[in-house]
Image (tube, rainbow, N blue to C red; front, side, top):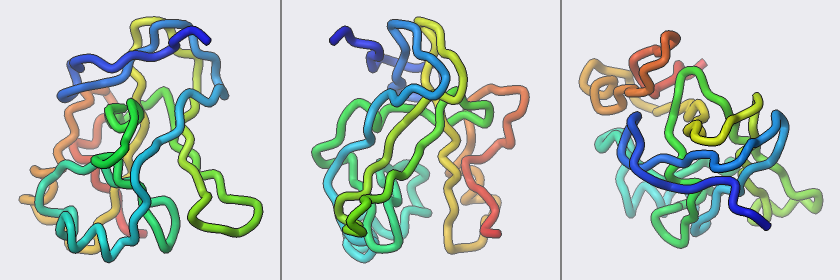
Length: 155
C-alpha cells in the first residue's frame, strides 16, 4: 500500500499531517490510536486539560478516551481548522463493548497532494471559557472562517 499521508512541520502549529497522494471525499484516512484510559485516569495524569491548551486526548465515549501521548500514531499530529477538510468519526463497536469503539479520520472533501489534513477539534471544557482559557486554546488555523479559539460552546 502506498503512503497517502506524512507528518512534518506545519504552518498552522508544530507538526501536521499532509497528503502525499490524492484523497477522495468520504475516504477513511487513518484511525486515531493510543492508550485507552478512563476520564478520571486522564484527569489524574494530566489535570482537567483546561490549563495547558495542548493535549493528545480524544474522547471516545462516556467511559473512555484515547491518549495518543502513549502508543499514539500519526493521527495525533492532525491540526485543528475552523474550515477543515476532514472529520473525526466515532465508530461504536457493534457488540456494545466501549473498549472496542474507534475514532476514524475521514475526508469531507477531496484533498490534493501537499494539502494539510485538518479537522474541527470541537473542544468542550466543563469550566467557564474565560479570556485566559480562550488565549490558551487560541486557534491558529488562519481560515477566513476562524473563530479565534478551539473551544466550542457547551450547548
